[in-house]
Image 1 (cartoon, rainbow, N blue to C red):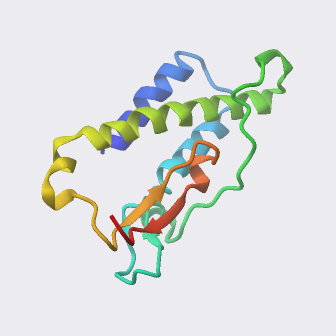
Image 2 (image 1 turned 45 degrees about the vertical axis):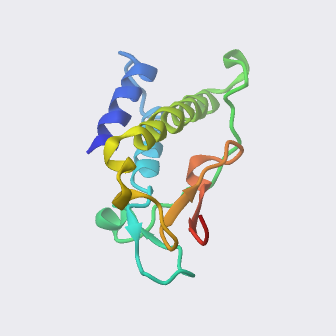
Length: 144
């Protein structure tokens, strides 16, 4: 799948050839949880229901949830504990992923055809620069 390939590519760019400690593998677990929480398709056609089918449903039969944490991207590395540094790497990864991967979806030819255009009743993600990716809201399109 394109999202998984894209994720692996950017993880290699951010982590490089470094060998991760046991604690640092937490980063990979968080990335997997975010990747497996992305909405694939609405669960129902009800316009008031914004629940979506995610890859997590196929893995554990439910949504994968995480508690949001404050972003540490702007903090200096030498002032952070090891756990905070791992969190900063994760935040940096998600900034790059959201900026680069989401743009590739918008520019792909299959998304510009008329049958792939958003329409009233479609499920969508409401992206916000101020909100962590795990907390982006799901919404239904009510008007174009």
